[in-house]
Length: 52
Picture: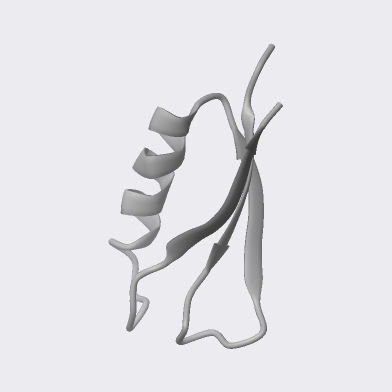
């Protein structure tokens, strides 16, 4: 099954990255939207993604 491995960063969390995998780019951006609806002061951004 194909998928996407990604790294997300948030400038409010200097030096930390979120590493994850998902089934598609569409679900990746759904995940990004979900994370940005949590109690973080600044939004996450996708730093790197690679289709596998």
